[in-house]
Length: 394
Image 1 (cartoon, rainbow, N blue to C red):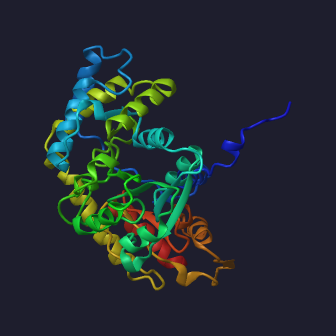
Image 2: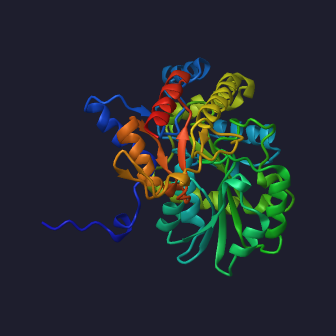
C-alpha cells in the first residue's frame, strides 16, 4: 500500500533544535557522555508556589473541558500582567490562551495570512517561524542581520524588504537564538517605517521578556501607533521553567483574537485545565519571585562568554537576554579538523557533537549560516566541561 503523505508535510522542515536533541539522546543511549546545549529549556524546577496551585486545582476537580480561549480568571491575570509589565491594556476579548506559545503563533498565521502574503523575518529568527508561515501558505522573507548590529534589523533594512505583498513582520525580543534585545529607540525606528505601511501587522514574540539583563523590557505594541496592529505573544515556558505545561497566550486586536479562538475550537479546543490554574498563580505573583533564575542565567552568560572568548575563531557579541549565545564561527569554514572538512555551520555543529560530545544547533536553522546557537540553560559544571571539550577538539 502506497504512502501518500501530503506535499505540505513533505515540504516542511524538521525542527533543528528538536532534531539535535533527539540525536543527542540517541548517542546517550549508546553510552556516550553527551552534554546537551541545544534545547531552549531552563534546567530549573518549577517554583514550589506554582506546584502547590496545581495540586490545589486537582483537589478542587478542575478536570473538565476548558473554554476554548481560556478560563476567564486566567485571562484576567494575563490582562493584569500585560498592564503591569508592558503598559498594555487588553480586554478579555483580546486575549486567547493556547497550548503553548508555538500554537499561538500558528493560530495567528492561519488567521491572518492568505496564500502569497509575505512575512518579514529578521534573521536570525526562531526555527519554527519560517515553516509556520509556509504552512499558512505565506512567503517568508528573510532580512539578514549580523553580529556587527547585534543581530537586529535596522529601519532601513525593514523599508527595503517591504513590498506590496508584505502582510506581517515576526520577531522576538529578547531574541531566540541571538539573545538580542530591541531598545525602545530601536522599536520606535521600526514603528516610524511602518507608519507609512498601515496594512502591515506585527507579531512580537516576548516569551523571554523577563530574562533580560539590560533593564526594562519594551513591547512594540506600547509604541505610538502600534497597538492596533500588533499581536503580542507570550507564555510561561521560559521565565517560569514551565516548558512541559504548554501554556501560551496572545494579546491582539479583537478581530484576530476571535479568529484564533474560532480556529482553536476546531483544532485543540481549550488548553489543559490544571496548567491554566497554575499559570494564574504564576502570573499574579511579583516578578521578583523568579529573579533567582534570571540572576543565574546572567551569571552563566558571563561565564560562557569568558570561556568561549578564549577559543580562537569564535566571534562573539554580548547577548542582552534569553539564555543563548550565537557566535559567528565562519573562521572555521574551509578548514579540516581531525579529518573532517568544515564547510558550513551544520558541519561545525555535527563535528562538535561527534568529537566533543557536545550538542549545539546550526545557525542555518535560524536563517544565519555563519553561526551556531549554544544554550546556557545548563549547570555551571556542564557549561565548563562542554566548553573545555569544544576548545580541545578545535
